[in-house]
Image (cartoon, rainbow, N blue to C red; front, side):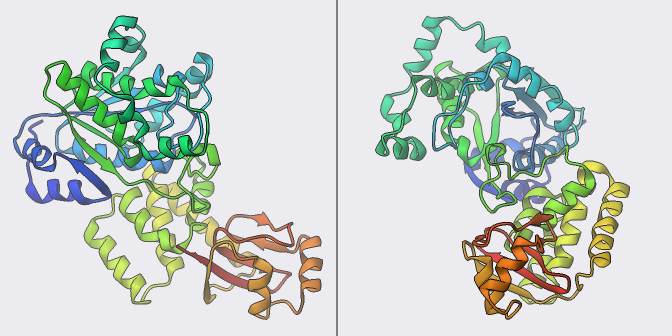
Length: 400
């Protein structure tokens, strides 16, 4: 297959959902050159599931793969044991080899939900990292100073807070950097939290007298609770979620995330995404309808059109049978407010006494997530359609 060098397609790849490109002119020139490039992406099996946050990069890889380039997919069976704390506010516990092996059982199958089997190489980094001698590791470490490591924002915060930082964490960027040397990467793709590690790849390639890789960083996305999507926080939408579960989770997202998810988690053309964005801004489309389309697009990507349509119908029928009006007016509030105060201000309950009685009777529910509210002082962190008693409903979106 000949490499495609269409300028418009390449420019969209370099813009859509992209946070930063290091050596953008170089990268664009490479993509326009017609040369078949080796594009590296690594993922550590720290949990059994790949979630949509990680799939943002996979979708970008597929776009580059469709141009005819080779995707070098690295399963971090060695780095996964050590643990990367690039995006963590505390030290990540070391996993055992057994845990990593168990977690990575279906990783390739999950990745292939997006990536084509053509122009795809799969590697396990224990193959080269497990063979490094102590003197070789010391030589790699000599390429960096301690100041380089502690200048990173999350490490600096932990130092200022007096939190423990293990020497083990210092080695992780060296290992990810060595991956780039081992597979002769032309480009490395990853999230913004991986910037230091990917730059380490450039430095080690230069030290090995190789052409340094260019770097393409994609944005991180929020999970179902509004925080960064993370398996550690349990706020993920996983590629292996059942269609109805995946659909329902997407419908529970805060409305301000709709456009971001269209950009980062679907293959809907940007021209169409921009139309949806303008319609939402101009209030010419109901956010719920936009979210229904979003949920169907994402579910279809991983489960096929037929199952996605069934999930959509099941979702709509569930709401219809339970009596939630289709044309509910949406109330927009700040996150962290007590649900009781919001319900009282809207006149849906007469007093805090009535609210306590309803909560005690398990009669307050977020219908989009199925969560029964059991805390009188429940603070709202994510939106939804709330059923209060038998016949009162309110749709709430959390701002920001």
